[in-house]
Length: 118
Length: 110
Image (cartoon, rainbow over all chains, first blue to last red; front, side, top):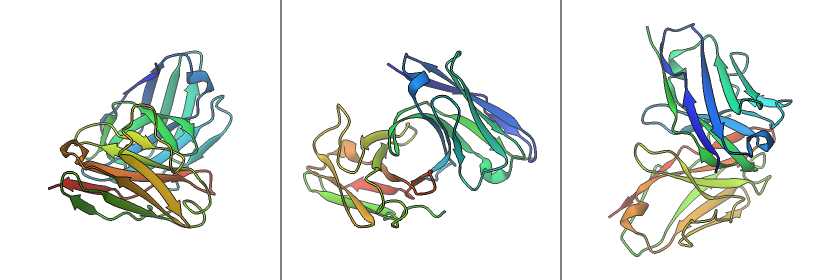
């Protein structure tokens, strides 16, 4: 069964960068579209980005376009989110999740918290 | 892009049925049969309970059902149980090749 484990979160200052990682276990990762979703403390879910199974196609929310980059290494079963020029409003728990079809994310990691503060 | 519109809260007594609405536009909810619903208990990871408007993943109770009319999707929970108390989120695929979530609805079981 596919399991996802995020890492890389922490406290960063405004304007700094951080890279989140998501380790996948299971045999279907290489065929799966993967997404990042975030949730600020006490707030709702917000979609961030997605990447095609082979890494050839990516899409971003307007709020992170030009600052965040999603990528993957299928040989290592790893998903990444490079986050640059971080702002206070980027503070959230970041989840990686697997897409099964349409907008349906059936497997989620436990999340990693990113706090942007001076 | 603004979030899909959900009521902030709904409530019901054990055994009753409740419905949560999720309103979007023709560019998302109304344009695709790709509406999903998630249940999130406090401090927990979101759990997929409905996909493609009406389908339940394996292991999800038949008390949960979904539907859609025009630009509005709905989640109905029948035979409310205490364990159903949680936050519920809808999501939809969009014409911009993105995914959009609703603002979330807090369900209280009285």
